[in-house]
Length: 503
Image (spheres, helix red, strand yellow):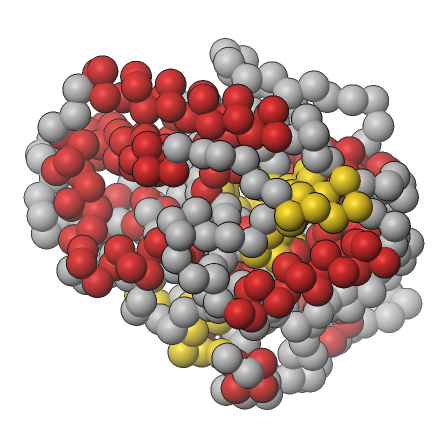
């Protein structure tokens, strides 16, 4: 697929209009272009200096959402009045004081608001408390003004649902923004805000980031709180973080959100160095495994292979060692185990909702692919679940051993370019869904199984180039991108990404 063809339908979307936010008593106003050109830390700095107020920045975000979202369908729940009421008198405190934030509409609680999980069965599920992550966001000064689209229960690599409809890629409206954090990626790519909350249970941060030309980091298991309702998503497969335009924003969000929560079984070490400080540290010479073969033995699209090869050459030019390598994995067994764990997670969520509503879920309540998974989950035994968990523990052991010999792995993010809308919909026959699903996460899901952190292609390229200043982001990868997985110390070296479009 030619990049020009992929981008041609949306290049002029809402370019360059002033937001009209200048006001008396401020040294300067904030135009739409200025708002879109600042990352989250940049906006926080403007507010801290008094150049703009937090209210002005929030209204800028709301105006962009109202202007752009009817075209891309990213922001599905609007909490504008709540965000306005939350603004403090005077300057907000915290590292990201006054910066607008959107939550993903999946497995997170914001008191007195709906979290639908992309499902008709949860469309009026109102939280009576905040998630711990929401509390940490607010302590850092973030102002939550809505939620972004997710497919039903996050169960696919696109963002389409019966409840909310199709979320469109801002670079080409006929193509998927990825999933399941496609709403977050589309909102950030369209310039509604510079960073948005996201989650990843099999690639759901990295795939949308790659499709939309952004930075997406899936942290290691247990680093970001998931509670208090449950301490793990999908029995440890899923972890929350963000999709951002700049790498430094991702580092800042990691700083303000990481850390243990009461009762957690997994406690990653927390060092004394902040990610925001450490991300400028030049990486040492790295030994990198180039892994570009499909786990299911299927062809990898030439564009995806070319992206990985191009990045590998860059690494070599910077003095790093590249070796084609991959561990031997029990592929069928481990993906089967992942299906057991995701299906069990959905089963429990539906059972809890049944108790709230006082009725059983029906086939009309959830989408066809998920209905099939639900029926399969009902038949499984405790032994099936236990053995699935043991299988993924074994995968983690294999990956840990492999990464004892390599500093990081370089691979494509997906095996094919961003698909057209509909290809990965949960609202279609199973036989049509499976072939497309096999190509969306063969490179991403195993890092959820092993609990390791992973990031999309833009991160590793900027890290290895050792940039010291923020710069505009690249266009989205036409090829599904290339992804680096590494120790946390490598992530610290990554630099702010560049903006990738002008609207």
